[in-house]
Image (cartoon, rainbow, N blue to C red; front, top):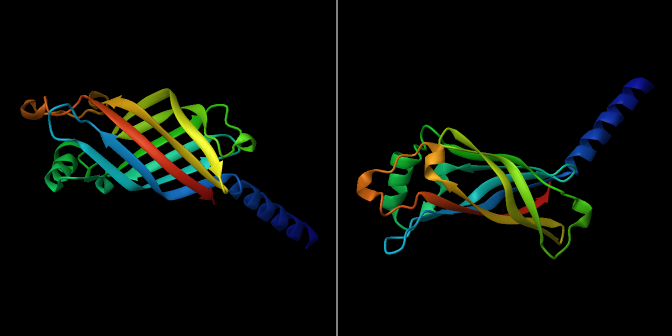
Length: 183
């Protein structure tokens, strides 16, 4: 009986310790823009990105539902989902990676720059991102992570029809802003 109780106590303590290293959000902001000058803005945002950070080792992951991106123009949103993102076939985009030199004990209200490396999956294709920059701060127990990076449309096997090729950038700027709470 004592051994069973001791084992159960160790499991519960271990589970609690692991959970204390996780910070999480379901309301992260992800934005992308593929605009070109002199044409209509091609920009969308998604305010329901799920993200998690393991403060013990700097591992970071994010998931965004592709149909959650909102454009100014409903027709543009429809074209994005049906003709470019194929969101019925590829409903989510994910990122899994690591923040380098991450030390949660050094986080403060002043944002510090870090780099991250990982794999971005979108439209059934995976692209490795290396040495991308982000900012991290901790304010009132909430970890704020934000940054930007650029990817090429061709990296994700997305074909842009010639009729609109001069209206869309071949490079897409992606930005993110996450406020992570202790899980």
